[in-house]
Length: 512
Image (cartoon, rainbow, N blue to C red; front, side):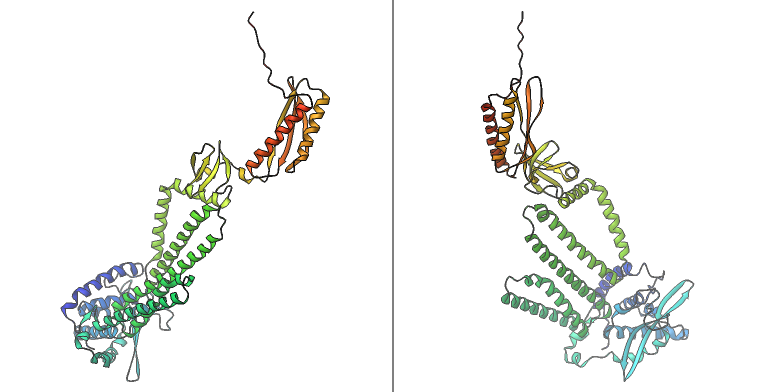
């Protein structure tokens, strides 16, 4: 079809130009030579060429054609006309700007000479017409890409392809001649209708899956699967009803963005499913992993997936991702310096959680305190003391403390000291030693050491007997009951032997 350029298209073209300028400022700045017309690489040259054409500045667009072989008088007339015909060719045929190289040296793997770049191929009357770009030196140290001079002679022949199709002839002419972003409006309508149809098809597939297998894990993948399905379907629709070249560039980028988000979303759902299954198999006492590390790790991993997908997409669009990564590194360093204590506590929490010196519910001694661990978080650990108060210890300090896990004992030590009176005889002491040994041997939960009862020393006021044994229990209440019973039996044995425990010597001085 022949283009109908009218003033009603200016706002749309202005918007497209602004978007294009914003994109190209990041896309080509690191690679282009300082050319005011932006001809530093093949893709940039054609993008700026189409931008000039859409602004109806065909004299400027002619600067993107290698017309040096034309006579000077002929350049002023033929250059703009060839530019307009090339615009029609690129906009009204399935031309994809994204296939052009963004490298200032061009695509070195296309089989052409290093100075040439393939632009597009057309078939007319059984002949193949190949249009090419050429890299020329217009000024010292200034290499620009132009439409090659031999290709200019092929443009008028190829322009015959630009005609209304039989389908467009059957449409109301208002839909064909009215344009939005230099694209006939019927194509936008077709894309919209196709998108709506894809939405309904996706909803129907979801409904069918929900009816077949309600509650299935596969239902969690409905959202990302529908997004990827819609993006793939729209990509096919763009091939059937392609927008103009610049509009197609942004539409395809939007579709690529949606597809990349769908893939990242799909991976994030997989992470959630794996994390939920892992959580269901964790020890209930490992609350720090369940409520702190696992959710945080899951979120960090999902965020990394989205960032990685975004960086890959930006790199594919031509943006300098190394600059973005450098900016993130500087920003991360600034945040780290501003939050040293928070990061110290975070790593302290990771250390406590990973090393697991104590778990939630354990009784431990930390510093001068004894208490029960209530919660191990990423910033602090909360402990209920014997006074029933709750102490919150920053993890940076808690990880550096000497921690005694009292709940980690496999048995408890029974080691009372007996101080017999100084007037006890040797026979009485032997009777006490034998009786205590018999008492320990009669208790089924006692695990005596090699010499469980021994006379260790004697002083001016008493004979010192030491008892050493283990009670095979981890229940502190059971330990208290057994210890009480043993102490009462030992006291009775001392009384039976005819002696008693020594009492502190008290002296009374009377004033004369």
